[in-house]
Length: 202
Ligand SMILES: [Fe+2]
Image (tube, rainbow, N blue to C red; front, side, top):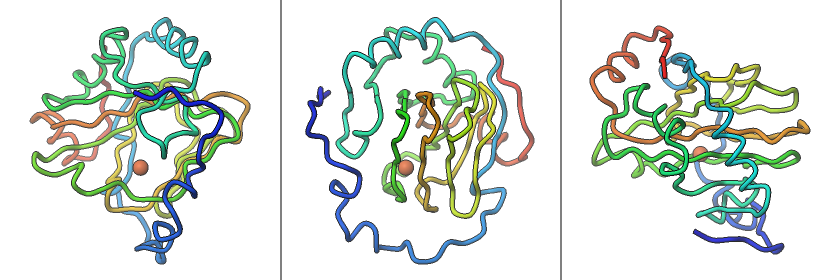
């Protein structure tokens, strides 16, 4: 974990120009397979979220330089058991990482694709869970699809390694997402195959 001071590189400085030119010329139409909301988590996590926000507001915490525009917490599973349990109820069974991405007002995470090796050997799936209701000015883009107007608990699935994506927060509210990556169990594999929304009860 790194505690960052004031000299934080922008996404552009971090990635460099070659990232911006590679494989990013053509945006194609998404299919339901590549990005969609797969369901909603029902439960209460405001107390834990408030504690993380209070901690992160004191200092910018991140493990990754390219996420420097986030208040991006490292492993918080010990201090936030409820948030960590969300991964379980969604159907992640092993090799599971949970992180909270709190994007500050006025910040962008520029267009990119995730590294493919993050999702292979073993096969892993990544989702984002909205921890607070959508605020005007916040959006996620996946290829040609805008994801906005989410509700707290919405579970957003995408093939992050196959499609271009970016996020911006032009609201006046910090935007908390729970980022989960891990091996899907049978129930989650089935859910991804049938393409119906599901309620995940915490
Ligand atoms: Fe990404």
